[in-house]
Length: 126
Image: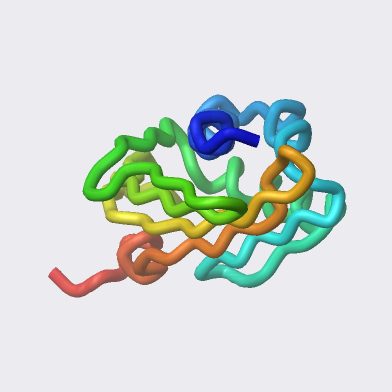
């Protein structure tokens, strides 16, 4: 798979989160996909569905904006830097996120997401 197609997959992934499009989300990840988030590790369709249920019930008006290095791919690995904004657990939030991606069989196989969960939950220091 060409690097451009893998970059498009990363953009499709965040777009599926913005749109709350579970069908699109599941179509671009492998059946054994794992997502390591600040809230835990979620692997397989059942765990992902439970996480997405919680995520979409607590996060509204989600938007992703490319920043910094934006999206880069080399081989079966990618990195995507973006700013996330929206209403999260009842509070407006905006913060930087960095995700590393691993691809397998023309799909996303694993993502490691890093951001400040305290800031995400609105409990950060002022």
